[in-house]
Length: 209
Image (cartoon, rainbow, N blue to C red; front, side):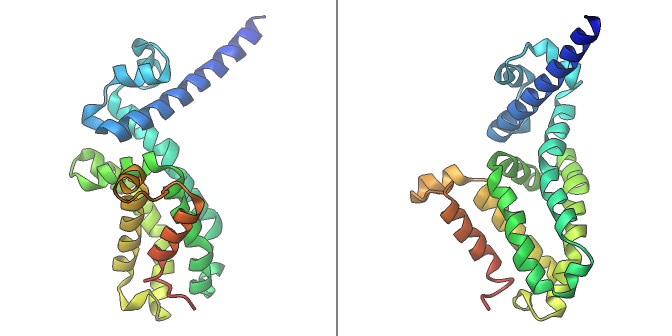
């Protein structure tokens, strides 16, 4: 009996942690770090505010865990698909891999908006995101962009310019789907719209063959 109770407690703890992370992502992306409070996050997660400290000792620790929990999918995707052998044909690799990576921005617009917020304001959190998220992704993709440049792609732009133009477009476009929809009436959550947006972002890097 005690063993069963212990297993249930571990399950509940993991579930509560998941609920807190999802609620925190929503609150941080809507209100920003300064505007978010642990009280609001706890309420959104459906737990007591005092219980929040059991999982996360501070708001900053919770914010970091939110980034870690939700931002690693894109890096894992690149690690799986971007191999040394793939660089033998960089144009084909870019066409095969980059749309899927950009789609990860559209798949989680709250995370994309949160990342856009932190990349845009100089702060210790900005430095943390750059070091733990931005640099690892660039390090994975820079060999591909350098190979594309060597092959005469990227529209004659330097690899860094092409890369940051692409990522910037994805952050702004997919991090603000409601804004784009309010301004234009476009169905920014529709698959066809997302596909067209990705194709447009990639066109300066890989013009249609």
